[in-house]
Image (cartoon, rainbow, N blue to C red; front, side):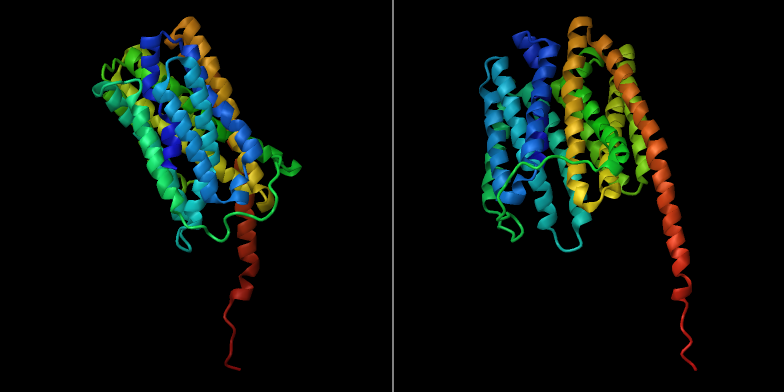
Length: 402
């Protein structure tokens, strides 16, 4: 799980170096970033249930192999073409490995510990993003070969974890004798409005990622005044740390409120990045990263809770897969579009455009949370209260003295 997110965010601290050393435009940088979700989308559509057929271990090993290839392409890259192909392999690898890794954590946990396994999964995922920022920033600033060394280190870690995965036992439920086939994502007609509300909340986290991951280091260096890559990485790691903290807190918040808070936090975060560029403050950049992390956690957790709480069990996998699909489509469109504006008009203009356009999207999420999910939550509470009232007489003690 940690490697999947480390791999997805590993180029973040080297994007400014590609621009400085290779003369790469911001549009190209965001296309390099977007190659990851673009490659991952077909994996979700065509191979979403592959681990149910070939087993968790086999699917994770395939994913790790693709991640290794992608990271090594970055390590030896001499031009943008290598980076685009490398990001595509990273997307393929993460798509193959992250879901079976998540499921395996639950399957191998002790009975009754599924919730704990999910919480650990969320925390360790954010830890992977933090590693990408801190390790990448430190090696870029203080080690030789700043464009390459981080990727050699990550490739070595992937190989080591692959050796551990080979030694995993084969659980009896892993792997199905049924013949694998492509299964389409189906959203039942009666659940489509609820799915829309959950999917746009889910997509909000991916849109935040489209700002922080490809442009975060550039914002810190050009607008907030950070001259040290390790400090920049540490500031961006605050984003990952807050994802962990607030993801754990999210379990205690009602789903409709979670969606509303996530969208409001996302709206606040994008405008805080704009203000950071106006006043050139590292402290404000720190605050913007923290708010973005909290909002990301609430957006992501809120969308997942909508799918799991309001979908029928037989449609839950399709709802979640559909949510991921919409999230990555939003990211794949949002990041290159934002990069094109930055290249044409400058970083501040790009941030203003992103804050306005993405902000409008976040307002729609708030409306969806209040108009669709809040009434469902109230209806559920009333139904639960009615059921409790109806069974109260049956729960009175029986007089056995006669």
